[in-house]
Length: 286
Ligand SMILES: NC(=O)c1ccc[n+]([C@@H]2O[C@H](COP(=O)([O-])OP(=O)(O)OC[C@H]3O[C@@H](n4cnc5c(N)ncnc54)[C@H](OP(=O)(O)O)[C@@H]3O)[C@@H](O)[C@H]2O)c1
Picture 1 (cartoon, protein in one colour):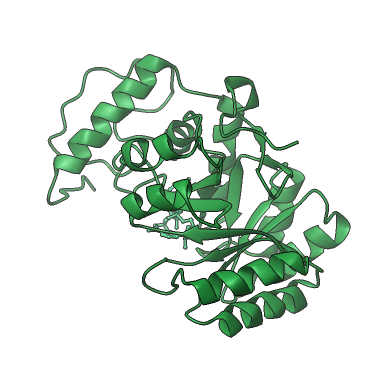
Picture 2: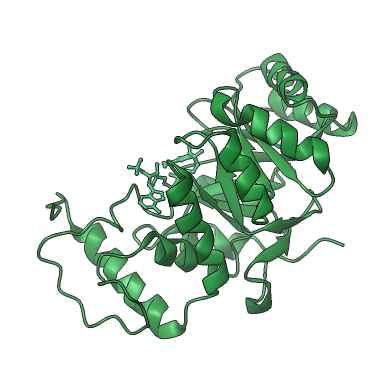
Protein backbone atom coordinates (compact mmCIF):
# COMPACT_ATOMS: atom_id res chain seq x y z
CA UNK A 1 0.00 0.00 0.00
CA UNK A 2 1.39 3.45 -0.81
CA UNK A 3 0.91 6.37 1.49
CA UNK A 4 -0.96 9.50 0.50
CA UNK A 5 1.24 12.57 0.38
CA UNK A 6 0.14 13.45 3.88
CA UNK A 7 2.48 12.02 6.43
CA UNK A 8 0.50 12.84 9.58
CA UNK A 9 2.04 14.32 12.70
CA UNK A 10 2.39 10.78 14.04
CA UNK A 11 4.59 9.99 11.08
CA UNK A 12 7.09 12.76 11.68
CA UNK A 13 10.04 10.36 11.63
CA UNK A 14 8.97 7.92 8.92
CA UNK A 15 6.77 7.72 5.88
CA UNK A 16 6.13 5.36 3.00
CA UNK A 17 7.28 6.67 -0.36
CA UNK A 18 4.75 6.28 -3.16
CA UNK A 19 5.80 3.99 -6.04
CA UNK A 20 9.14 3.17 -4.39
CA UNK A 21 6.87 1.67 -1.76
CA UNK A 22 9.37 1.60 1.08
CA UNK A 23 9.20 3.08 4.55
CA UNK A 24 11.82 5.78 4.85
CA UNK A 25 13.37 7.78 7.64
CA UNK A 26 12.30 11.32 6.70
CA UNK A 27 15.82 12.73 6.51
CA UNK A 28 17.70 11.61 3.40
CA UNK A 29 21.48 11.77 3.30
CA UNK A 30 23.34 13.53 0.47
CA UNK A 31 26.95 12.48 0.40
CA UNK A 32 28.49 15.19 -1.76
CA UNK A 33 29.31 17.91 0.78
CA UNK A 34 32.02 16.20 2.79
CA UNK A 35 30.88 13.15 4.75
CA UNK A 36 32.52 9.79 4.06
CA UNK A 37 31.59 6.12 4.07
CA UNK A 38 32.01 5.74 7.83
CA UNK A 39 29.48 8.55 8.31
CA UNK A 40 27.05 6.75 6.02
CA UNK A 41 27.36 3.59 8.09
CA UNK A 42 26.87 5.60 11.28
CA UNK A 43 23.79 7.34 9.83
CA UNK A 44 22.37 3.93 8.87
CA UNK A 45 22.80 2.80 12.48
CA UNK A 46 20.74 5.84 13.54
CA UNK A 47 17.93 4.79 11.18
CA UNK A 48 18.68 6.73 7.99
CA UNK A 49 17.81 4.73 4.89
CA UNK A 50 17.44 7.17 1.95
CA UNK A 51 20.75 7.66 0.16
CA UNK A 52 21.18 10.29 -2.53
CA UNK A 53 24.03 9.16 -4.75
CA UNK A 54 25.70 10.41 -7.91
CA UNK A 55 28.67 9.30 -9.98
CA UNK A 56 30.83 11.98 -8.31
CA UNK A 57 29.83 11.08 -4.71
CA UNK A 58 32.97 8.95 -4.41
CA UNK A 59 33.60 9.40 -0.67
CA UNK A 60 30.34 7.66 0.23
CA UNK A 61 30.15 4.98 -2.45
CA UNK A 62 31.74 2.20 -0.38
CA UNK A 63 29.56 3.07 2.62
CA UNK A 64 26.30 2.97 0.65
CA UNK A 65 27.39 -0.24 -1.05
CA UNK A 66 28.05 -1.85 2.33
CA UNK A 67 24.79 -0.64 3.88
CA UNK A 68 22.63 -1.89 1.01
CA UNK A 69 24.50 -5.18 0.80
CA UNK A 70 23.32 -5.93 4.34
CA UNK A 71 19.72 -4.90 3.78
CA UNK A 72 18.70 -3.91 0.26
CA UNK A 73 14.98 -4.17 0.94
CA UNK A 74 14.96 -1.51 3.66
CA UNK A 75 17.20 1.03 1.97
CA UNK A 76 16.38 3.49 -0.78
CA UNK A 77 19.02 4.45 -3.34
CA UNK A 78 18.26 7.58 -5.33
CA UNK A 79 20.56 8.29 -8.26
CA UNK A 80 20.97 11.95 -9.11
CA UNK A 81 21.83 11.64 -12.78
CA UNK A 82 21.64 13.72 -15.91
CA UNK A 83 20.68 13.14 -19.49
CA UNK A 84 19.85 14.66 -22.85
CA UNK A 85 19.53 11.35 -24.67
CA UNK A 86 17.99 8.03 -23.68
CA UNK A 87 21.23 6.07 -23.96
CA UNK A 88 22.95 8.46 -21.53
CA UNK A 89 20.31 7.78 -18.91
CA UNK A 90 20.60 4.03 -19.44
CA UNK A 91 24.38 4.19 -19.21
CA UNK A 92 24.29 6.13 -15.93
CA UNK A 93 21.77 3.72 -14.42
CA UNK A 94 23.84 0.70 -15.46
CA UNK A 95 27.06 2.28 -14.17
CA UNK A 96 25.40 3.01 -10.84
CA UNK A 97 24.14 -0.58 -10.56
CA UNK A 98 27.68 -1.82 -11.11
CA UNK A 99 29.34 0.67 -8.76
CA UNK A 100 26.86 0.05 -5.95
CA UNK A 101 26.65 -3.67 -6.66
CA UNK A 102 22.87 -3.78 -6.69
CA UNK A 103 20.18 -5.10 -9.06
CA UNK A 104 18.02 -2.01 -8.99
CA UNK A 105 17.87 1.67 -8.05
CA UNK A 106 14.83 2.85 -6.16
CA UNK A 107 14.71 6.05 -8.17
CA UNK A 108 16.50 7.70 -11.05
CA UNK A 109 16.34 11.50 -10.82
CA UNK A 110 16.85 13.63 -13.90
CA UNK A 111 19.14 16.21 -12.32
CA UNK A 112 18.46 19.96 -12.67
CA UNK A 113 15.69 19.64 -15.24
CA UNK A 114 16.05 22.14 -18.06
CA UNK A 115 19.80 22.57 -17.50
CA UNK A 116 21.58 19.23 -17.16
CA UNK A 117 18.59 17.08 -18.08
CA UNK A 118 15.58 17.33 -20.29
CA UNK A 119 12.12 15.83 -20.17
CA UNK A 120 11.49 14.51 -23.68
CA UNK A 121 9.57 11.51 -25.06
CA UNK A 122 12.93 9.82 -25.83
CA UNK A 123 14.22 10.19 -22.27
CA UNK A 124 10.92 9.14 -20.77
CA UNK A 125 10.71 6.08 -23.05
CA UNK A 126 14.17 5.01 -21.87
CA UNK A 127 13.23 5.51 -18.23
CA UNK A 128 9.95 3.63 -18.64
CA UNK A 129 11.86 0.77 -20.28
CA UNK A 130 14.36 0.72 -17.40
CA UNK A 131 11.39 0.61 -15.04
CA UNK A 132 9.85 -2.33 -16.93
CA UNK A 133 13.19 -4.13 -16.80
CA UNK A 134 13.20 -3.63 -13.02
CA UNK A 135 16.44 -1.62 -13.07
CA UNK A 136 14.72 1.39 -11.54
CA UNK A 137 11.55 1.45 -9.47
CA UNK A 138 10.61 5.09 -9.89
CA UNK A 139 11.33 8.07 -12.13
CA UNK A 140 12.06 11.44 -10.58
CA UNK A 141 13.59 14.80 -11.21
CA UNK A 142 15.44 17.49 -9.33
CA UNK A 143 13.93 20.75 -10.51
CA UNK A 144 14.30 24.45 -9.69
CA UNK A 145 11.44 25.74 -11.85
CA UNK A 146 8.53 25.51 -9.42
CA UNK A 147 5.71 26.33 -11.85
CA UNK A 148 6.94 23.62 -14.15
CA UNK A 149 7.21 21.24 -11.21
CA UNK A 150 3.56 21.94 -10.43
CA UNK A 151 2.58 21.06 -14.00
CA UNK A 152 4.70 17.91 -13.94
CA UNK A 153 3.04 16.93 -10.66
CA UNK A 154 -0.31 17.12 -12.42
CA UNK A 155 0.60 15.37 -15.63
CA UNK A 156 3.79 13.44 -16.36
CA UNK A 157 5.47 10.08 -15.95
CA UNK A 158 7.35 11.38 -12.90
CA UNK A 159 6.85 9.52 -9.62
CA UNK A 160 8.98 11.86 -7.54
CA UNK A 161 9.88 15.55 -7.45
CA UNK A 162 12.97 16.87 -5.71
CA UNK A 163 12.36 20.56 -5.05
CA UNK A 164 13.57 23.60 -3.13
CA UNK A 165 11.54 24.36 -0.02
CA UNK A 166 12.55 26.30 3.07
CA UNK A 167 11.44 29.17 5.27
CA UNK A 168 13.00 31.72 2.92
CA UNK A 169 11.60 30.06 -0.20
CA UNK A 170 8.16 28.65 0.67
CA UNK A 171 6.83 29.13 -2.89
CA UNK A 172 6.25 25.40 -3.35
CA UNK A 173 3.20 25.87 -1.11
CA UNK A 174 1.60 27.82 -3.98
CA UNK A 175 3.28 26.44 -7.07
CA UNK A 176 3.58 22.72 -6.31
CA UNK A 177 1.75 21.41 -3.24
CA UNK A 178 -1.79 22.24 -4.53
CA UNK A 179 -1.10 20.02 -7.57
CA UNK A 180 -0.01 16.86 -5.77
CA UNK A 181 -3.34 15.30 -4.95
CA UNK A 182 -4.19 14.03 -8.42
CA UNK A 183 -1.19 11.71 -8.88
CA UNK A 184 0.52 11.73 -5.47
CA UNK A 185 4.19 11.96 -6.53
CA UNK A 186 6.77 11.76 -3.75
CA UNK A 187 8.13 15.13 -2.62
CA UNK A 188 11.78 15.31 -1.58
CA UNK A 189 13.03 18.71 -0.53
CA UNK A 190 16.46 20.30 -0.62
CA UNK A 191 18.02 23.62 0.58
CA UNK A 192 16.37 23.50 4.02
CA UNK A 193 19.05 25.94 5.25
CA UNK A 194 18.69 28.25 2.23
CA UNK A 195 22.43 28.08 1.51
CA UNK A 196 23.08 28.77 5.22
CA UNK A 197 21.33 32.16 5.00
CA UNK A 198 18.83 31.03 7.63
CA UNK A 199 21.46 29.82 10.09
CA UNK A 200 24.03 32.63 9.91
CA UNK A 201 23.37 35.70 12.08
CA UNK A 202 22.31 38.69 9.99
CA UNK A 203 22.71 42.27 11.23
CA UNK A 204 19.69 44.49 11.81
CA UNK A 205 16.95 41.85 11.94
CA UNK A 206 14.23 42.62 14.46
CA UNK A 207 11.92 39.83 15.56
CA UNK A 208 9.57 39.17 18.46
CA UNK A 209 11.04 36.73 21.02
CA UNK A 210 11.23 33.12 19.88
CA UNK A 211 8.01 31.41 21.07
CA UNK A 212 9.47 27.98 21.70
CA UNK A 213 11.87 26.32 24.10
CA UNK A 214 15.54 26.27 23.20
CA UNK A 215 18.93 26.65 24.80
CA UNK A 216 20.24 28.63 21.86
CA UNK A 217 19.82 32.31 21.06
CA UNK A 218 17.38 32.71 18.19
CA UNK A 219 17.62 34.28 15.62
CA UNK A 220 19.33 33.01 13.55
CA UNK A 221 17.60 29.67 13.15
CA UNK A 222 19.40 26.51 14.12
CA UNK A 223 19.83 23.89 11.38
CA UNK A 224 17.52 21.67 13.42
CA UNK A 225 14.71 24.26 13.23
CA UNK A 226 15.22 24.64 9.47
CA UNK A 227 14.84 20.90 8.86
CA UNK A 228 11.88 20.69 11.27
CA UNK A 229 10.19 23.56 9.40
CA UNK A 230 10.36 21.55 6.19
CA UNK A 231 9.35 18.27 7.82
CA UNK A 232 6.39 19.91 9.55
CA UNK A 233 4.83 20.40 6.13
CA UNK A 234 2.53 17.44 5.45
CA UNK A 235 3.25 17.48 1.71
CA UNK A 236 6.95 16.80 2.13
CA UNK A 237 7.83 13.15 2.34
CA UNK A 238 11.49 13.64 3.11
CA UNK A 239 14.07 16.40 3.57
CA UNK A 240 17.62 16.02 2.31
CA UNK A 241 20.57 16.98 4.43
CA UNK A 242 24.03 17.55 3.03
CA UNK A 243 26.30 17.61 6.11
CA UNK A 244 29.96 18.52 5.78
CA UNK A 245 31.07 16.19 8.56
CA UNK A 246 29.93 13.84 11.35
CA UNK A 247 29.23 16.69 13.77
CA UNK A 248 26.79 18.32 11.33
CA UNK A 249 25.25 14.97 10.51
CA UNK A 250 24.64 14.28 14.22
CA UNK A 251 23.23 17.75 14.70
CA UNK A 252 20.86 17.43 11.77
CA UNK A 253 19.54 13.97 12.57
CA UNK A 254 18.42 15.35 15.93
CA UNK A 255 15.72 17.31 14.07
CA UNK A 256 13.80 14.10 13.57
CA UNK A 257 13.73 13.32 17.28
CA UNK A 258 12.40 16.80 18.10
CA UNK A 259 9.18 16.31 16.15
CA UNK A 260 6.97 18.86 14.39
CA UNK A 261 6.97 22.56 15.21
CA UNK A 262 3.86 24.10 16.70
CA UNK A 263 1.84 26.79 14.85
CA UNK A 264 3.46 29.67 16.77
CA UNK A 265 6.95 28.40 16.00
CA UNK A 266 6.05 27.87 12.35
CA UNK A 267 4.59 31.38 12.07
CA UNK A 268 7.70 32.86 13.68
CA UNK A 269 10.00 31.01 11.29
CA UNK A 270 7.92 32.09 8.29
CA UNK A 271 8.22 35.69 9.40
CA UNK A 272 11.97 35.29 9.82
CA UNK A 273 12.28 33.68 6.38
CA UNK A 274 10.38 36.59 4.87
CA UNK A 275 12.72 39.10 6.48
CA UNK A 276 15.76 37.21 5.24
CA UNK A 277 14.22 37.07 1.79
CA UNK A 278 13.72 40.84 1.78
CA UNK A 279 17.47 41.33 2.16
CA UNK A 280 19.23 41.98 -1.10
CA UNK A 281 22.65 41.88 0.54
CA UNK A 282 23.63 39.87 3.61
CA UNK A 283 25.45 41.67 6.36
CA UNK A 284 26.47 38.62 8.39
CA UNK A 285 27.55 39.12 11.99
CA UNK A 286 30.89 37.36 12.38
N1 LIG B 1 21.47 23.74 -2.72
C1 LIG B 1 20.91 23.63 -3.94
O1 LIG B 1 20.56 24.62 -4.59
C2 LIG B 1 20.68 22.26 -4.52
C3 LIG B 1 19.98 22.14 -5.72
C4 LIG B 1 19.72 20.88 -6.24
C5 LIG B 1 20.21 19.78 -5.59
N2 LIG B 1 20.93 19.91 -4.46
C6 LIG B 1 21.46 18.70 -3.83
O2 LIG B 1 20.65 18.41 -2.72
C7 LIG B 1 21.45 17.76 -1.73
C8 LIG B 1 21.26 18.44 -0.42
O3 LIG B 1 21.77 19.75 -0.54
P1 LIG B 1 21.21 20.93 0.34
O4 LIG B 1 21.71 22.20 -0.22
O5 LIG B 1 19.74 20.75 0.52
O6 LIG B 1 21.91 20.62 1.76
P2 LIG B 1 21.73 21.37 3.15
O7 LIG B 1 21.69 20.34 4.19
O8 LIG B 1 20.62 22.39 3.07
O9 LIG B 1 23.06 22.25 3.23
C9 LIG B 1 24.31 21.65 3.33
C10 LIG B 1 25.35 22.66 3.83
O10 LIG B 1 24.85 23.37 4.94
C11 LIG B 1 25.81 23.46 5.98
N3 LIG B 1 25.35 22.69 7.14
C12 LIG B 1 24.67 21.51 7.15
N4 LIG B 1 24.42 21.11 8.41
C13 LIG B 1 24.93 22.07 9.21
C14 LIG B 1 24.99 22.22 10.61
N5 LIG B 1 24.46 21.33 11.45
N6 LIG B 1 25.61 23.33 11.10
C15 LIG B 1 26.13 24.26 10.27
N7 LIG B 1 26.12 24.16 8.93
C16 LIG B 1 25.51 23.08 8.40
C17 LIG B 1 27.11 22.88 5.41
O11 LIG B 1 27.82 23.95 4.83
P3 LIG B 1 29.33 24.33 5.30
O12 LIG B 1 30.21 23.40 4.52
O13 LIG B 1 29.44 25.75 4.89
O14 LIG B 1 29.44 24.09 6.77
C18 LIG B 1 26.61 21.95 4.33
O15 LIG B 1 27.51 21.79 3.28
C19 LIG B 1 22.88 17.78 -2.25
O16 LIG B 1 23.17 16.55 -2.89
C20 LIG B 1 22.86 18.88 -3.29
O17 LIG B 1 23.86 18.69 -4.27
C21 LIG B 1 21.14 21.11 -3.88
